[in-house]
Amino acid sequence: MWPVGFTGVRFKGEVVVLDAAGHVAATTGRDYYISIAPAADPDSDRLMRAIGAYPAAVRCPYPQDFIDCTAVAEGAADSEISRRLCAQLR
Image (cartoon, rainbow, N blue to C red):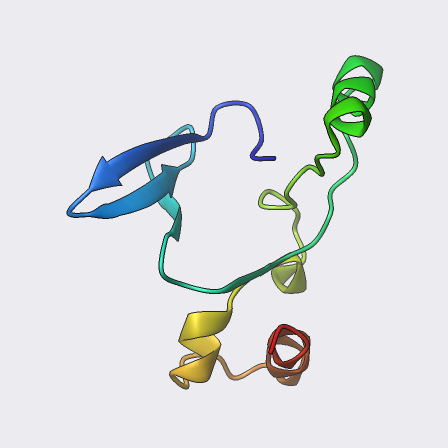
């Protein structure tokens, strides 16, 4: 589940997820490795557990929490951790 303030919009046949500032966070057609973040508050935690959702770690300070694995496959990543985590998705 994307954090509060993130939104999805259609753009040129894709769905693009934007953060609160309007920056692109994710796009359909790409593979991502997304860690689970802690829930923002107890109410959010209860809601997510009730619907079987997990908060996406897109605002976490660690680069391995949100990785564009398509970029890794295209050679854009130089991190061994990124390569290993994305390999788990295949």
